[in-house]
Amino acid sequence: MAMVVLRLPPDTQLVGLARLVVITAARDAGLDDERIEDLRLAVSEAITNAMLAHSRNGCHEPISLSVEDLRSADGTGDAFAVTVQDEGPGFDPEACAAREREWSEENGLGLTLIKGLADHAEFVREGGMRVQLRFDLPAAV
Image (cartoon, rainbow, N blue to C red; front, side):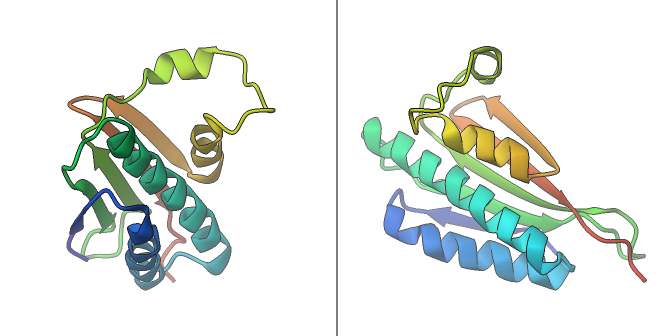
């Protein structure tokens, strides 16, 4: 599958559309139903966080969402990848990882969920915030 890239206006009403695109691509890539539910929640958190970052900072630039099946033509490779890129100020991933989690507040819970649900999650602060997720695909039979 070729990479699919969407550029979404920062409108939280479009989170459902983003999820639909990602879920459809993941299902086509062979991700099973249980992992698709994990993906759905992780993508919802990442997209919503990006849109809220734009809203808080008066940024009207689109948010970039890309999805890709990382298997090669011969069926090798093992992951489905999703990247969410925003133009907001971002956050320091190292500082978030180092601090004690305050579970009585919702703030920061999305980061914890994303890390727990994806097989690999990377948060890069670079010209905005880039969240890269990978979900392992089952071996081809």
